[in-house]
Image (cartoon, rainbow, N blue to C red; front, side, top):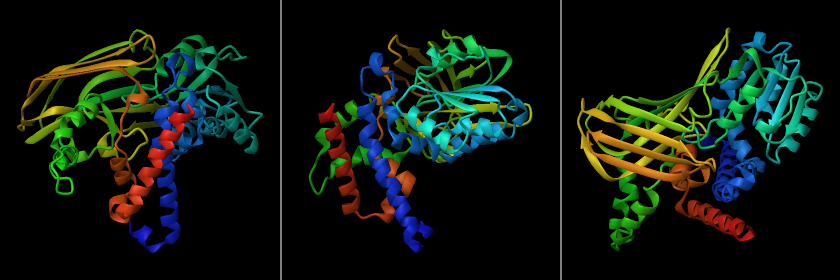
Length: 403
């Protein structure tokens, strides 16, 4: 913030990012809302703004770069497949690490831009872009030595890329071949955030002097029924993280990720009012010479995935040492969407269910996101925020009208 105040150039760059975030907020729900059978979530990835957010996620990008370049012995002279390659950055890292051949496989329209970028950086002799679905790609050599993929989505699985990765692995990965990442884990914790909860609920008690509490039931019904994406505060995590799912990329089967069930068992770490249940994941990029843990927990700071929180319709109180007991289930549907359920027995009885979940159902409050990523509440006037949010709304309506 000090840099923004002192340097107009820094301020301008921040506001450029803010404008892009507004565009992304307006565009993403529309471009991902096409019928799954027709687009399979690929259509949305044809837009540059999505890839800008991904590439600029330094935690993500630097983790992959470090894992590739500091494990050069795994890449030198090898055939590499970059699955869901986007703009081809992991492919370029692999070429830089000495790969003999890299297949950059991308199903969206951004593949043509990736091809141009690779040609501009004089890597076309090493990197070949294949436009099409991962599971339908044909590798001329008949096998690959290394698979690199950033397949993770909200709630770890919501991008629904993992089945395609596993299908490709079974078809093309050489004996003793390597996969980056090699392992993934999903975690759950109780979450407390009185200020944010009050912003969502208590705010309506006094709206410019008027009582707006009749809308609270609709807010709860519409906004708390599904899990949502949010940047969560580290001090809001008030129970020991409970491991609810893990994936070994070398041994996992399609059935393993179709029906996920787990027992929740942990303890409350401090007295708190519980407003929701938080979820996040981490992945291990593991090589013989160097391993990297890419963590999306609240304590890890910003990532483009954020975390997932499932707010409760009725908050409850918990005390340090209380047992957290229950079950978690996530089932993949034939359409590549997910039915999710959480049931707690203690410290309070909670039953949450959401059906047909995907990236397009992942609500996020724009005020919250701008506040976290840009410190915008302190730096912008209400009028500036309102103009930007109005612009986002108009863009959203425009894209909806255009189909």
